[in-house]
Structures are given as C-alpha cells and as structure tokens.
Image (cartoon, rainbow, N blue to C red; front, side):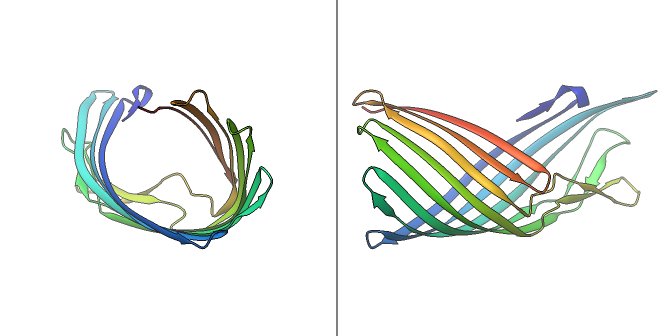
Length: 216
C-alpha cells in the first residue's frame, strides 16, 4: 500500500505470482533460467479540495506482467574465496488496464498501457567463508536497458483531450552492486543482511534486507 497524506491520496495493490525456475551445471559452469507471471488488483483513491470544489475520487483496475530471465556463470574456487563472473539477460512485459475514476467532475480516465523492457548485466560475484560460520559476499555489475525506459500514462478529464503524465525514468545504463554478510548464530538460527544499490543516468536506488531464519 502507498499512502501520501500530503497529497490526500492512497493506493493498495493485491498481487499473486506464479514462477518457474530451472538450471543446469557441470561443476564450475552453470546456466539458469526462469519465468514469472504476476497479476495485480489495484485500488486507488484521492481527495481534491480547491476553492469550492471538494471531491473524493476512486478507481479500481488491474494489471498483469511477465518476466523471462536467464543467466550463465562460471565459478572459480581459491581456498575459502569464491569468484563467479556472470552474464544475465531479463525481459519483461507489463499491461496496465484502462480505468475511469468515479466520485465527481474532476474524475480522470486512463487508457490501457503496455511497456516492454529488456536488461543485460555483466558482472562479478565474490564470497569468502570464515570458519564455516560467517560468509561475506559482494557483487558488482554493469546493467544496460532497452525498450520503454520512460513510462507514461495518458490521462484525461471526462470529455477532454488526454495528456501524457511521465513516471520515474528507468536508468538505461548503470552500475549495480550488492554487499552482504550471513552468519550461522546456532545450528538452527541464521542471520543474513544485504545492501543493494543501483547507480546510473542521474538515478540512485538503495535497498537493505535483513533475514532471520529459524530451522525446526
């Protein structure tokens, strides 16, 4: 869910996904591939208060997407250090359905939208194991994108001509990184923390994940 009280707007998304994954290796070299299909049910609402106009507008619509991906890698082991150069390819297709808001004269209508993007990534992963208890890892790669890098929507007031509204642009080329550390705290408990970053074309994305696992 996304809540923006400063803009008097709210949106929630219910998503279900189905994925298939496979792979093969001959020891050092490996090839993996897969596909993911997702379906979204979106409910959005916003309020408008301008002079004498006060309206609460809402819309419900759907979207679906699929992604295909594959990766080839080669693992090099040197003592407790592991190096793995890799090449990855992913392609995605997303279809957002048309919708019409209800609730007042300021309601918007939007036509359906289709976006297609493809990414290639060349990079290197590394990991080091310390005493079979702690593993530190890192990844650095160069990602290049093709296709619909600047998403947009055609929105119109009822009875008026449509205007294009631009979304956040996707960096067509840039650096992708990951730094992580995992530890076996006990035989049943493990902790993993990771930082993910993407840098390119004037955009910077940061992410941090922490997972605590308990085995029964």
